[in-house]
Image 1 (tube, helix red, strand yellow):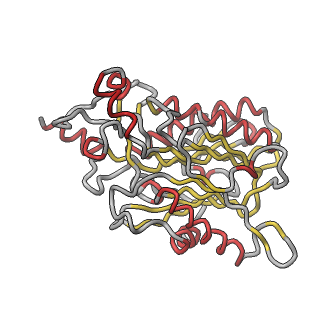
Image 2: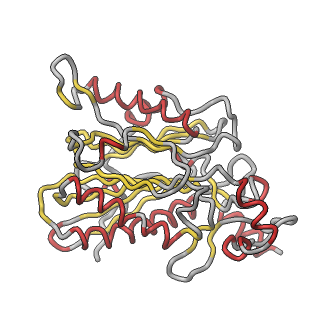
Length: 332
């Protein structure tokens, strides 16, 4: 597997990515533009989603192509930023031509970050528009930017003992010129794991000192874990996987479904009732490819994007990052 220079979802032809954020409010949004249109799919597996325009992505619905996907902070309030993405696309006559105008198709998903910065400032249409203006097909900034600005992970014991999540991306270049890429905003209830070693990179810290990893999986089966887990209702992992393969709408939905396996590789536990885990899929190309191949590698790039985003994150709002936590541990 030879990786392309960006090692990002923008390695997929037809895909652009832009971030916008408010670092004082510790929130932001990320737009994935596919202005030429892309066959879309979705898989919503967590129990607490905040989403927009997901039903139209499913088979047996009229719309076949989408023009952008928005990943945003701000909980359900942040979905308003999609209006700015629609305005940007309508101005460029991108969308379904209905005669009097073009209606852009912009599915979206949001994550909860209201309690890390300012809860009264969330992504809005202006921020969504700004993310579109910043979009390019070049390298993608990762970590505490865009939808990853206020993202966190390891939320079992709440804000006092979690760690910084972030947004990350990765890609793989397969034989025949097929590219699969992913971008993921990590705001998980569980811990983020390095799939190669099984070690925790970032996650819940053990009370009361917060100087060690609690290991969420181990803590879940304790009296304390059972008592606090049901109150941690502020989590979700949202992302997009894209390919330049030609897929049907049914295959795009299968791609999104298989991409969710990447969450299980890199987050422990994943897909709980306390998460809103949602993955979108985009297919921009014309080459017919076996969906099993594309889906298998989608899981790999999603896992790598999760790890990349958390490792690139910086501390914000008093929440330590993986790099800061490792440095503190070494200094003890």
